[in-house]
Image (cartoon, rainbow, N blue to C red):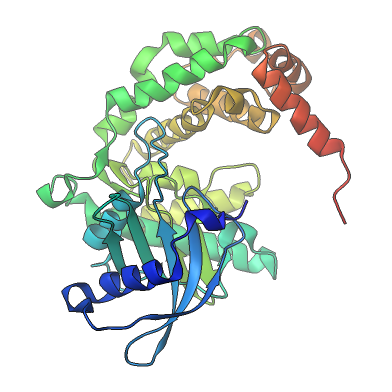
Length: 378
């Protein structure tokens, strides 16, 4: 869905906000002229657009603009708003050598309190997750490059985790992790007969996130998926920092390599490169346990967001991956014959049936089935 025009500022307001963001106290008398406005293909969490403008010195500048516009997506304390993301760019990312996209400025509306964020526009870039041209070469190289960058980012900020200047950042604690697990178990109640191992995992209490609390924290992106990494030539652009937090860096690595689409050898290569850069003197003995705990967290984080997400068919793969990570941490007995097959019970068909019996989840599964069976529009 594209951003509705009603959520965008009028041209005069946009020009005024841009001047204030770009020039601060020196904006008086500086005229920024709006030449073109285009909508990205997707709105994302907040309204956004691509603005081409002429600066007072005659130069043309393309800007990616993101607006709060009264929107909020707190996500149980996981995400911040546009103001929060703007502060991350200003107080964390701006000082990083060579970081892209460059932070151009921010503007806070004195009446509404809404924030506008202005960034360098990464034209002719592609999301790493969407690379199709020479995919077998470019995509593995790009995601490995992202893993190296990520490790260096975590090295830079591990010593700053307790810096008072970063006290504004969210910090993952036991209550935070516990909440995602609790919601997942509650939302997955209709699947209890098909996923009996969930009860065993629930009985283990807080054990699953213990490794995430004992490892040295750093600044993390929070949702460092391949779709948040843009590639243009050999340059990477890291975007969407509204979920930035202080937590275990392994969470970002787990996100980068998560999903059914990445071959195992690519995942292992990313892990090796991350460890090589972050810990040149040797990988900590507990790294693999922390990484598995991070994977468990990500599954809880997406399964515990909304009941319909917990029961939709596209989420079913997460249950098998969740169980496998829990087994590696010794949180489950490992008796697969007692607890079922690859999707954690009696196969995806019966899980789908359980979801369909559960009201809203059933309606969602029906829509998923209809979308899958309908021919693609030409």
